[in-house]
Length: 155
Length: 200
Image (cartoon, rainbow over all chains, first blue to last red; front, top):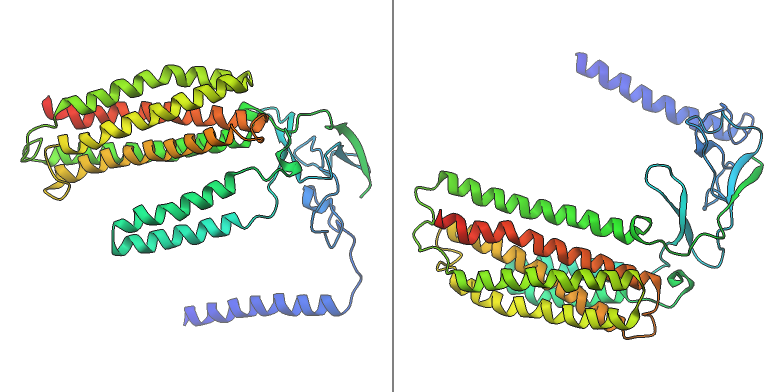
C-alpha cells in the first residue's frame, strides 16, 4: 500500500515538471539571463547560451562570483583566435602560466578506440590477440601523437 | 552581461613546461595508475606467500644472474636518462638526439636479458599460484619496458624530423625520461619479491 502511494506521488512529481515545462514554453514572460540573481558563473552567459559559453574567459575574484562584482563581468583578453586555446594556471594561486592549445578534431582517437576493442575481444579467444592486436593500437597511438603542423603545435 | 577586460594574457607562452604542461600532469597521473597496479601485484604476491605452505612453492628459487644483470643495466640507465632530461630542459637538440639514441639502446638491452629471466624463474606460469604470481610480476614489468621503449623509439624518430625543435617536444622528452625513471624504480621491489624473498 505504502509503496503504491509513493509510486503515485512520484508520478505526480514528474507530471508536474512536464506540465510546468509545457505551460512555460507556451506563455508567460521570457526571462533574462539571470532571473534569480544567482551567484555562480553559468548565469553570467546569455540565455540561451552560445556553444562556446563565453567570448572571453571570466575572471573569478570571490566565492560568490556574480555577487561580489560591479555591473560588468571581469574577463581575460589576449587569447589567440586562430587556434583552440585555453589558460593553464598555477595549482595553488591560480595565476595564469601559459596559453595551452586544445586538440583539433581528429579521427585518431576513434580509430584507437576501435583498435583497442578489437584487441581486447580478440584476447578473450587467444593470448596472441594481445600480441597481434597491439600493432594496430600502436599505429593509431603514433598517428594520434604525431604533430599535425597546425597552429596548435606552436610553443 | 557587459564585459570588462581586467587582464591581458597575450604575453604568456604558447606552451608551459613542468607543472604548467598538461602532459606533465597526464604522465604523473599515469604513473599513479601504473604504480597502483604494481602495488596490487606485489600485495598479491605477499598475500599468496603468507598463506602458502612453502615459499617458493614446489620449485627452486629463480636463478639470480639474468635478473641481477637487468637490475644493473636499469640502474645504470638512470644516469644518462637524467642528463637527457636536463638537455631537453635546455632545449639542446643535438644532445637530446644523442641522448634519445642512447636511451633507445638502453631500452633494448634489458629487454634482451629479460627473455632469459623468464627461463630462469624455474617454474611455468600454470604450475601453481607461486608460478602464476611471479610470471605476472615479471610480465607486468616487461610490458612497461616494452611500452616505454616504443615511446622512446617514436620520440627519437620524431626528434629527427622538422617537428623536433619545439618546446612541446622537449617537454615530451622530459616526460618520457620521468616515466623511464618510474619504470626503473618500480623494478626494485619486484626484483626483491621475485629473487630475494624466496631466499629469506
